[in-house]
Image 1: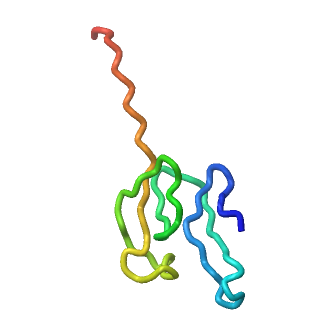
Image 2 (image 1 turned 90 degrees about the horizontal axis):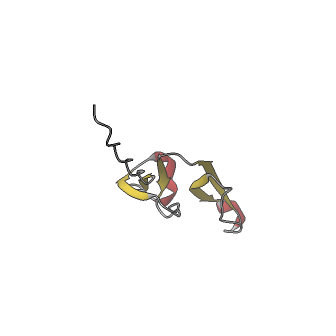
Image 3 (image 1 turned 180 degrees about the vertical axis):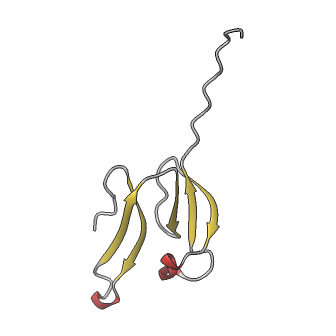
Length: 86
């Protein structure tokens, strides 16, 4: 299975179907945004960082407590103020 989501998207959770003996897996793929919740164990997109651990019923497939990450995009550096006098 291709584990690379389409450009501009991220896999937030993967669920193995117990009825197919681990041979199939479904992914929930969403568009990237500044802040996202992804299930523990999913790849963190390049440039993103973990902001905090959390729990969500959407990630119960990986356990109960602290089963997800809140990740955030890198903050663009503030542009320097111009030196024009007021």
